[in-house]
Every structure is written in structure tokens, then in C-alpha cells.
Amino acid sequence: MKTQRTPVKFELDELRRRLQEAEETLDAIRSGEVDALVVSGPEGEQVFTLRGAEHPYRVLVESMNEGAVSLATDGTILYCNGAFARMIDMPLDTVMGHKIADFVEAAEAERLTALIERGRSSAIRSEMSLRSRNGAMLPAQISLNPVRTDGSQLIAVVVTDLSERQRQEQAQEAIRLRDEFLSIASHELRTPLSTLMLQLALLERVWTSAPNRAASLRASRRPAIRLIG
Image (cartoon, rainbow, N blue to C red; front, side, top):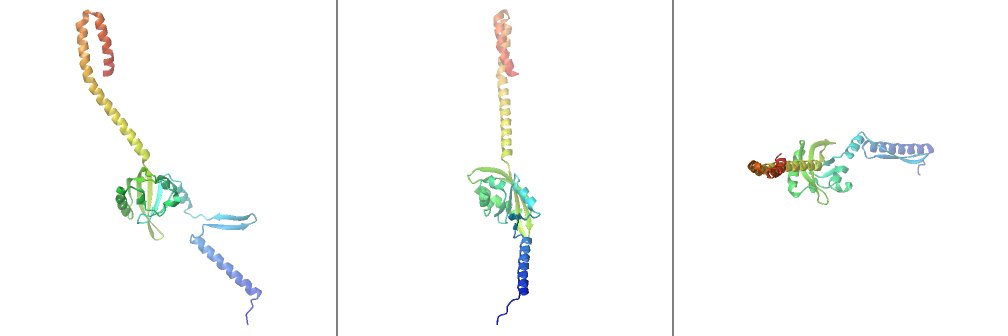
């Protein structure tokens, strides 16, 4: 004979089921498996996001001008911000899973691998060029720091775009070369002009009896004097 549940028994079972669901939901929230809740109210369903203490730091990283990357110890990209994705000219959601060595020249890959090896245990930085999807090269400084979180070892990477600094250095070098050329050219011009000035002065003395010629010589000397300074 089947046992029939009384109304009280039915209500108790329903309360136990709801309590179990509530406990499972709380456990999921505590473990980070839930990042939003849908709540029904008089105005309909509303979505409430759950922001942990790390939210301000995530916003900070996403708004940085520098590239931020989390690497596995083998160099696999686990996370990157928008700035790094723009540096290599790739959609953000396609970068994760690549090896960071995929974005440097083959000649630099071995040096980058050595940097990652050292970055597992100590902070280190170096300069090298990143290669974007279209093949353009971007001079960059790469800083690596070891990070341990939830028992996992990661490498935090900050990538700084050095293209503006490189342009300034090139402009300064061009100015230096220009000044050096003008200095050499001025020196080379002074020697023959000085000789010419002496010859004109001698002729002026010789032709003191011919005022017109002497005046012409003085007029010829003026441009040479201006060039010598």
C-alpha cells in the first residue's frame, strides 16, 4: 500500500527543497561561480551584478595605457587587457590561448623564452619589439613579475609602448648630426675664405691710388666677412 503524503509532510519537503536550492546558490556565490543574479520584482526581472573586492583593480587594469598580460609558466596568455590587444592589432577575445612568443620575431623568441624562465622566480625587464598581426613592429619594454594565486604560479607582464621615445631619440640624433655637419662645413669654409680675405686686403692696399677699385674690393669683402662670422 502506498504511503500518501499529508499536507504538512508535503510542505516540509517543499521547504527542504527550497532550503537546499538556497544553500547551493550561496555556495556558488561564495566560490565565484555566480557573477550576477536575476531578481523578479514589481517592475519585472532585474539583473544585479556581484562585484568583489577585485573589481576596482580589474577596472584599473582595463583602463591602463600599458599592456597587461597574465602568463602561464610556459608562456601561454591566460588574460590580457585591451591595450595589449591593440598593440598587436588583434581582437581581445582571440588573444587568450596564444603563446606570447607568437608576437615577437623568431630571432627574439629564444631571448623571450629565457626571460619567461627568469620571470618565474624574480622580477625582470627587457626591451624587444612586438610583431602585430599585420607584421608591423612595435618597440616595447616588457616587465615580468612572478605571482602566486590560489596555489597556481603565474607571471604578470606589463608591456610599455616605446615608439614615442624612439621617435624622440631619432629626432635628437638627427639634430645632433645636423649640428655636427654645420660645424664641419663652417670650419671647412673658414680656411679658403680667410685666405681670400687676406688676398683682397692686399689688393686693397696695392690699389689705394685707384679709389674705385678699392671700393669694389671692400664691397667684395663684406659677404665673405658675414660668412666667416
